[in-house]
Image (cartoon, rainbow, N blue to C red):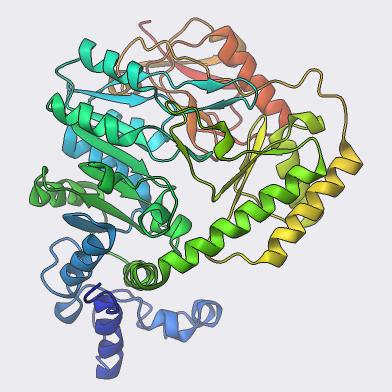
Length: 482
């Protein structure tokens, strides 16, 4: 890979440090001198490169030199026509995809088990979601990918839709048949968008699911900070040949900061270089660690760390083996209960726990001894806490009843009702367990008894419910007119 050993932003920052520039610009800490406590905590090396855009360092909003060069290297590394550095998180990348693809009143076909950032974007631009209810695995209690037939049906019923969005993969590691969905989109004049927040490693590893850009996607949001090693909040938005990169840049600049952090930018640049040069070996080790953990956990008994054996050729077209997803109900514990015990009793922080599963995120920075500690803790938790699973709720997918668009619901006149009195009304806000940040309720959806029971059960089990104006989720805002 020509040039992939370079990191233009890093090189420019190192050159800048040698110049001993006197700062009469922002940030006001002036290379750390104005905030000794923060400098002591983060280190002088960090503070001296927390700088503002200037001629020698380029400008994220309108890159013409080192940032532009770094973006070109990223595009080459990921096999995209264009790459954009994102410092507002993958949320900003997802929103830029949606805002670029559709306008007010235009439709996007998508699975309902999307991250809230997708629906947030539709609140901003007034696009209309056409939900394809994902398949579910009743044994595991997880939502899967979209079946090809359901996507075809949605396209036939909504031929005017502007795009199809796919999770590649889901939080649990499940992949839809993205190649065929991309072809279906293009055959019908639609764009294919991919939320690839959890798929950075697909571009660099071997024997992993196909990455979105290779499958024909037009745009993909990639969380470099999740499995790629960059700093939290740094991501890429990738784009193909069928979209206008200059328009996408304009859309990005609607919401992304004009004060791009060079800490985040350099971390993207360095991490891209690392993966381009060493990603194959890195993710080979990650896969080996995850498979080792999966085998050891399945030897404990009652836990089920699932993998490629659940592939069905359609709604589970492929599976990401780096995702250490573990079903816990046969131990007699909800996933969130195992999550809490691991954190409180064993000082082990896993990514999330829901009603039936936990996800332990295995990536570039993990070691075998960390895996062994997790396995040992899970074994001990089973010995200490195993009980009958009667009464435990499976996390089955709840099909939404969409009444009005997210934008109309969110900006409507609202009434606050106690949770128990909200049944039958139309919700004007979000309710979700975070993580993973997939809404139980989204603006514009009917509140049903099943949803209320789910919320109450999640609260009882200790899930962190977010999104509602009432921080305790004891009241819901509903649309006054419905």
